[in-house]
Length: 247
Image (cartoon, rainbow, N blue to C red):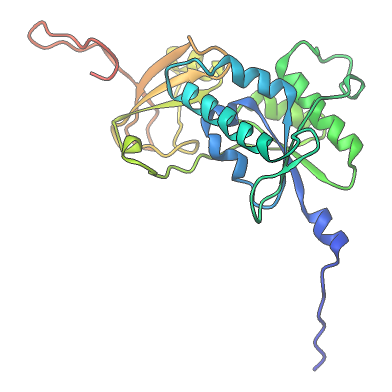
């Protein structure tokens, strides 16, 4: 019997690595997403930094994630030059901040749009490094559709629910970033299912917040993965009414 052994060359290993371009909504959902892609590299569009900065003063989980992301990037900046690339950690890839070449974006897409600037950054990286797969990660459905139409690999981001401290224990209410259309559909009594996007417990309340407009939201109740989210009525008992969404 003849046994063949194949040894990967350095070139093969380089080609196997990917460059991930994370949309703003990924950082605002999970600041730990920076180190969630193993030994692959992370490319941060300048526009994403600008978008994260707009959310840092919010007094909700989105604001917490924005501030945490900024702190992590500042710590990495202290280790090196983000424009040239900084190693995230031992066994992790390199993170780099980059702008875009406006000529890479098709004329029928408006460069004033923040999503299109992120897409332009991904296209610029694809042009500059043809040997590396570039993947845009976004929780925005329309963003993923546009990327697919332009031939850009794209993925959704699935949040891993891990309790790291007592503050993260189950509270009965969670906030989830969704597209505008999801909230509109919910108010139009169309069935909305989020079970495949985030881990929810039976009878947990969900505050859906628009990933483009933080003032647009909808409060719902999760029953199980087989049933759509339920609207929350304003209950009262003995003329006593809840003062806020937590009550």
